[in-house]
Length: 209
Ligand code: PRP
Ligand code: URA
Image (cartoon, rainbow, N blue to C red; front, top):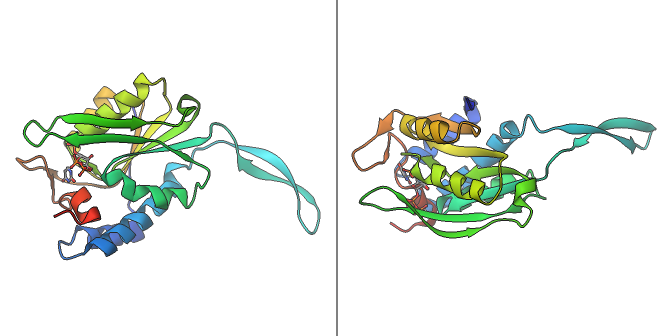
């Protein structure tokens, strides 16, 4: 079974509390998502393999560590996942970025794919799928299915806030995918919104409502 990691770090929790506040405006919301994403990627990448490399410091030659293994690919789920890209890229600047466009049909809550462009060598990369909200799990699970259909298998999912229902769904449909969240909230409401959540992440990020 995949692992689910919930970040308890005080800085992350503090910033997330400000994001949840309905009075927090677009600019601050974007900045905070950026900062939290940066803090999360530190832990999300903790198990990446390293190899010994030789370096000559101004003092002497020494053997130290450098990243080894598969290169990284980042795949934001459009739209709201875009808000997590810069924070991650600031720590992994060489990552390639793929995009998956999905929206939730407001009636059925089912995900509809409208765009997919992955790096050419995506199947040889360690992929980090990004979406601030994991509600029913329909969007994330469908995105992961689409990515797998393109031959990729090394996938981890990073969300800001998850509902138990979303975690359950992704874990049952993709037991190989580890999930990293800043908060695991209580439940979904009758409209499929996370409670207490932060509302519509895409709208708050881009000011569309
Ligand atoms: C939001 C969010 C997730 C999805 C989560 O996107 O960013 O992608 O809903 O819900 P789910 O787990 O029930 O699928 P939305 O469909 O509102 O699209 P947007 O990012 O374009 O606003
Ligand atoms: N999508 C969001 O943006 N927020 C939710 O609470 C659920 C889905």
